[in-house]
Image 1 (tube, rainbow, N blue to C red):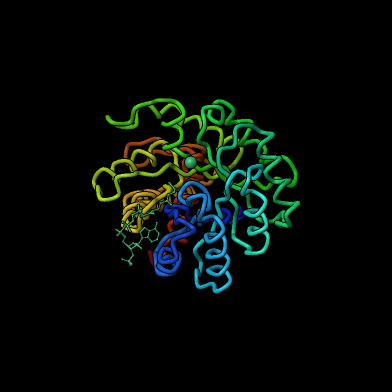
Image 2 (cartoon, rainbow, N blue to C red):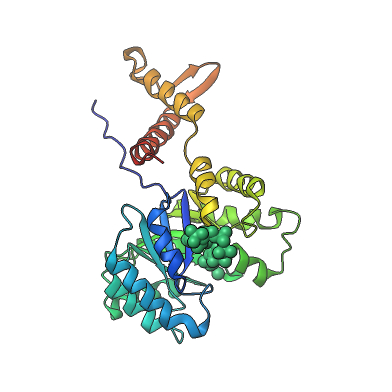
Length: 299
Ligand code: COA
Ligand code: MG
């Protein structure tokens, strides 16, 4: 085969927030079958608990035990009261990424990376940003395209749907339809810049049926995964954001059909009554690559 195999993808089906001040949650996270952990210093930590949360996170990360889980530190606004101490923690604790809240513009993202660098965070530490203000939605492409600015290291967008609802006044009591256009804008901006994009949280953590429905909706909208608030949400998110057995079987069929010698120079083939082009082959290869990584993890 002369074609290069696709790059090894990293699953981000499930990204669990943990309040940095919650020692039990930091401990329990070592046992959870989650793709990513977001150690939070921002809105889930009360002002008087910020210092204790930093200490708890520093201790947890220096003891380790998080295995292959990707650990991301969510800071407070880096230009605010707590920002400098949060940035120093990011420099000393060495998380796998830093997530900056409430960015509103391209300049905010560039300034965030500058503040992290000043505090000693290596440029190789990936940067994530929350899309959770009306301004961020309207400037989403400019924010996402900072990924192309040398040294910024932006890898993904995380939707903050609670803040978006608060800031805009949309009502979510009859479902997320009022958010759909904005979620789709974030997905398009992320893809235009080659970024990962993760859906917002589902607050009613005892309602598994509602959570599953929202995961399926997020996946249809193109999200890579979902941010979570409770361990009970991990297994459904892992299941729904992974390729299904039917998707894997179809992807295998597409790959094996194009691999036949008689199809070697065909741009389009028919499989089971459907038109399949080489762009579908690329999609099938991506599906199989992510399915392989998930199968290796065993969850
Ligand atoms: N991460 C890790 N463990 C968590 C957790 C989380 N986010 N949320 C709950 N747990 C643990 C609890 O410590 C408890 O562990 P244990 O029984 O083994 O000791 C177990 O899961 C069951 O928790 P439960 O009693 O059902 O929930 P709770 O009432 O203690 O907590 C919340 C409910 C919503 C307060 C809590 O889930 C939470 O703080 N979530 C994260 C909120 C957050 O970070 N928000 C910011 C982004 S929107
Ligand atoms: Mg928020």
